[in-house]
Length: 239
Image 1 (cartoon, helix red, strand yellow):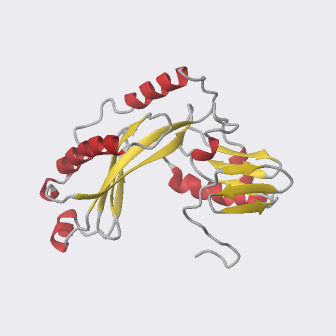
Image 2 (image 1 turned 60 degrees about the horizontal axis):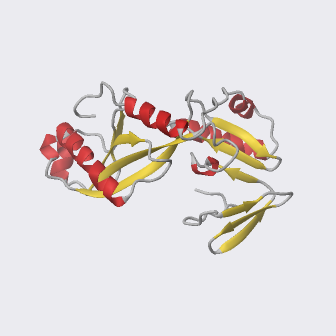
């Protein structure tokens, strides 16, 4: 649904960026020049940037089943797709996708802002499996087909970051695990902001509480590890 004047490229990581009147961005296979640049990732652009003492990366992981059969789908009710988000901060996120798979995500940890390695992922999948079987004992025979991890941006006071980092460099992100609605609003606002449009949504986003300062490493590592681990206190056996 992109407009005709938009070109979209996947698997093109920006590995270097030189700021100026015209910003120069380099990917493994190309060089891009742009007057304005919008960073709209959750955490990654801040890892080595101006906000690194205000954001920490928390690593999540989850598993996705194979496509369910019709008989298996009928054990789940009549909704074609759904999502369930726990009220507990350490609880699971469970979804029935439109292509008839169940996705379950129930781990969060501090892993030095990095994705999990293959061995770590396999170990976490045992946690996903036990939670899945507790929730859906009638589907305990259904295997997982996919396994993933991702890093989300988190601030100490659970606020977001929306600002102009330099005269022609804009950032919107750090959603603390709640990026579906906020990310949509921030995306609309940052486009208006970069276009020089003074609209109410931009003012609202600029007016959010500033992210609190975080201590330097190694204190940051110890604190982030401990606080993330504390999220799971009181979680039930189905996580």
